[in-house]
Length: 54
Image (cartoon, rainbow, N blue to C red; front, top):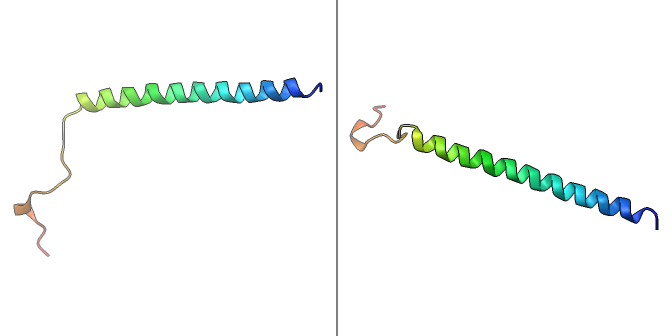
């Protein structure tokens, strides 16, 4: 019976760490979206008239 509170504390601690990691990840993702909006748009697609000649 003495070990059950330790197991519950460990589960709660793991859950809390998961919440913190998820929070930091979502903050980083929102900053990346803001940076994408500020960056100039570039395209990686070639126009059809500039095909590679082989």
